[in-house]
Length: 412
Ligand SMILES: Cc1ncc(COP(=O)(O)O)c(C=O)c1O
Image (cartoon, rainbow, N blue to C red; front, side, top):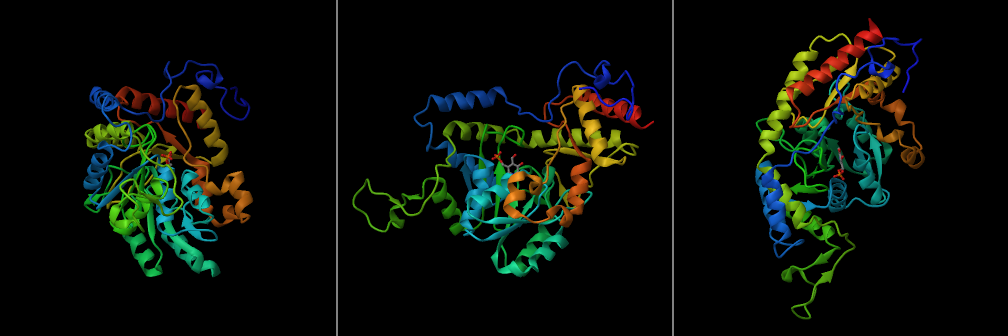
């Protein structure tokens, strides 16, 4: 793709202008790490008696629950289903509202829309991308206050959001708090494991996340009622617990007590997840090393800045977002993004604010752009650099060299 050479550098060294790229092979922004032990565990499950609804799923669930320090964990087919089940467990239904951040994957809001609810968007903090407490407070004072049934915060990029302040606000407002912790398995918050606060939290085990099961997710809670609701919802709404049946016509009898889904994880996926858990801490440690190296190499950089980290938490570093410093932000971010791709550096943008999606523009018919100025600027400036456990120091050097090569060509 040829850039407008009049407007930007006609520097022939830039790969986007026909120069030699910084590297010959594509560096993705994220990818899974699969060990021989993972392969063996999956293969042994494939040849076992159960491919679904067997013993590995509860084993995986217990391991994650113990790791995070919660009572209950329910493995589910993906992170979106986890959100759907969590919102359903809270009784969210037609006409309800949730407060959430627009700086997330669309699934955070979509899962509420599945239930007939709609999102209200709180703005984000400009230097962390985390949901802004004051903005939630403002939304809670709307006339539709009574319809607001959940506050859903996102551990953006792997950094736990402000759990303490959020829990205080949620309990003051009498509205349950849900953490979309898709990014933050393996993080820490105030001396504990991150990835859980409030009533429920959800994980995703998509391949770029802290651990993977291919597709997969989990719902966490300390509340038995919420847990039982999620279990029912995951499996068609069918109750099999003998003590929970409304009647019993015989040993074959089970009851579909509500409308649920088939959101079950397979034994094969759970086997991969169980095996991946053994590597979780080392994965997060390597991500932290990569993040620290980026921070050190980009400290005082004239073209780009890193996000702020909260002193009370340790991020799982799912993403490594940077912000372009030079105005006009949107135009410069686009040029840098295209130029980095030409250099074989597979950056991404996280996220296109949910309210910008045509579906939500039509559904909501409200000017969220105007109400979320920080989100607008964050989106205009953001680029996510590659980060994944198997990334080498050489790869990191390539990314930083490409960033500086482009910065110099464009702005010196
Ligand atoms: C913040 C966030 N929430 C929810 C999801 C949905 O997870 P899944 O892709 O497993 O359905 C993702 C996945 O990318 C995500 O990043």
